[in-house]
Length: 254
Length: 304
Ligand SMILES: Nc1ncnc2c1ncn2[C@@H]1O[C@H](COP(=O)(O)OP(=O)(O)O)[C@@H](O)[C@H]1O
Ligand SMILES: [Mg+2]
Image (tube, rainbow over all chains, first blue to last red; front, side):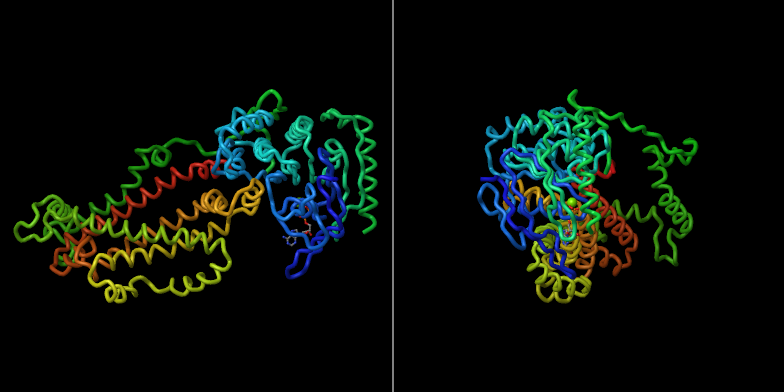
């Protein structure tokens, strides 16, 4: 059974003019799989992720996580937001331990794990810093650590590196590859960057807009473990070329 | 919000070069103007220069008779003397009814402001959060507050006297009412301005509604709450003086009106100065509390 299963899912935002953001989406993600959702801005990527996170109700179809219908947000689906969305009044440590604390876990239960996550994202030295004292990349590391500390079954990331400069983005992509290879949890990664999708994912779901739908799924069979050095290999270029052609076709069809 | 990794992380990281910081072009930083605006003693000199100048002019204008406007306005030295008697003179002695009563009157007024303001805060903040958070509550109470708010607290005076009599409670009521509006309105605005993704993040981490309220909405709206508290406190001082002039027989407002009636303008001026001083000090108190609680915010505005 798939960990995540979208079955004919649609989403329409009602309002002055109703927006059909997603139409008849079918998508399954297996345990431990890394799936990238690739598409131009406005095509419904965030909407799809928000449905899975439980932030928004679906309009039609069904959506299950681990066999259960998704009804509300929960710590089994860790979300990493584009701007990190840390609590600016809490230190790095307090941000990371927020989840365990509101779940009323005992300190003994979560402290070791929180420390481990802090180490995994390389922020031990910034335990007591406030978010405002961190760079964008470091804030996003905290965002990843606070999601991982809850031992989620899946990590949902909505353009998490989209606001970072090119060099920091490479660093963060490498970090995410390392983290994923260590923990092996499922990841749904939203991006509009083809390089990023090919570098990270096992499978790329290409989306088109109005209404948002998945037009193609492309398995990426580049060898693991990958690193940002893979970005310049001929195989990588081949994948990139293929997807670019594909997206042009999808775009032209409109 | 594109930023470089400006702070070094561990060896595991590819650190981008630190951004080059160039000081913006500025004129030569020397001279008296620079000293006055950029050093602590300089700023103090600047701050007191106009008041001192006015006091000197006032003093000079009234020399000879010791007063201006045909005896109505006493000079600063006479105000100062009256204030000293009022503050340190022996109570209940001789012909001066105010001798030695300054502290007790200050305490009366301060206590009323404290009680009324505390009441306004205890009701206004939870109410503001409720209205900002719950549409049902907003629909129910928002219109009521908007309609009641334009009624000035002075218009409530007869009502207050009728209900509470010539009692301290009437003053506390007016202060609480006056301070309530800015507190509730600013808290509501703060609550409505809480970032959606903070709530989503908390929900994702398993927070219950009470956690969202106390650990997200409350801290996130605290900056606006403090804006409301500062405005509310100012209104509280206005309200206490008005109430004491009319509806209570003690406190700085009572002395103010009473001294005017018996023609002690020196005490009137000393009283006004005392009100200003107390208002200023209580505002500094709130500011200090805000400074302490909202350290994170200062850092943030320094950064961005
Ligand atoms: N809360 C909302 N109300 C109305 N329309 C929305 C809402 N959220 C998203 N949309 C619309 O749905 C479409 C898809 O948006 P989104 O999922 O954010 O796209 P993406 O993340 O791919 O950029 C867009 O046309 C957007 O304007
Ligand atoms: Mg989006």
